[in-house]
Amino acid sequence: MSRTAEREFSAREGVLFMLAYVGIQLGSETFNQWGVFFYSPPEDSGRTIYITIGLAGTMFIIATFWDAITDPLIGWWSDLTHTRPGRMRLIPIRGRRRPFIFWGSILMTLTFI
Image (cartoon, rainbow, N blue to C red; front, side, top):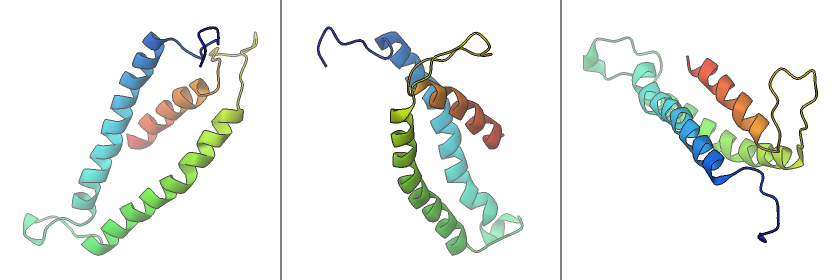
């Protein structure tokens, strides 16, 4: 990138996006780590075993492969997205990735809750 090229966001905004993603990643990893325990706890824990440990692990492996397929597609989609906020927009968001980061973080929070 040349010095004259316009950047999509500043370094400060990049750090703020990164810090926002820490919360999203913590929520996702918490679900991944504890999900197997809650679906298939140890037999001596006194909790109900809903599915076998193998099935629980298979579910999370399939979800990881699904992400490996859909993440590049979403990246391609966001590469083609160019938003310009109009007068009637509730939240003025400009750029390629910002709408995905903004709305994705809200949806991630709601689905995690």
